Image (tube, rainbow, N blue to C red):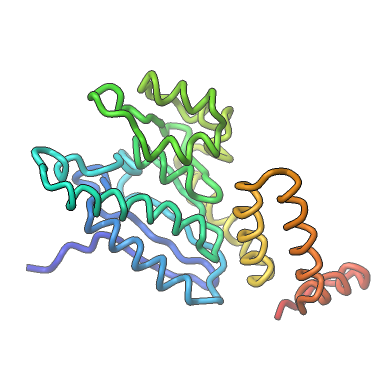
Length: 259
């Protein structure tokens, strides 16, 4: 028997695509899928030529249904449960720390940890038919880990509305509250995601890496500390070869030649 391939990986130039590949169970985040996804991200982290990662789900019905509840049902071993949650929360932090810009491409439903996955990505584009929910409260379980990303992405009030009601929200609402960046017709989504990935991939790899690190780090600081870090990072950035080349190219009215 051929072992199940939980994550499908393809690379085109500076863009990598990772596809959650458990459509028969809503691309739910089993321990094995999380391990596979983290391994793929770790491999791509070492590849400086890859600038953008697109994260998608197999099939059009469900992007990601969140945690695989089959692994929870009747499970009394606390060590297994701790390991499961550690892997999942580690995945979200790994996406935030990834050197590449990560774009979520959402078709269908994103629920619970699947919604958390969307929030953890740097950017998110969705089909107009996509829907979003953190419905744990409906089955007697608060969505504890998704709230971390949601509160930081869409704010306390909007996050609490999703968490406390467990409602399913349409893509238009997700766009309005800042959970996603753009909404497209289903047949145009792939083209839109590719176009955005190519636009970002045209930038300097070193600057994208430095910029993402700076953005994530400042978000967790006070305004005073964030500005202090930003000043330091700006001075460091000015010494980069790509910054010198980019400024020269701008003044000379030509396209930059990134190092």
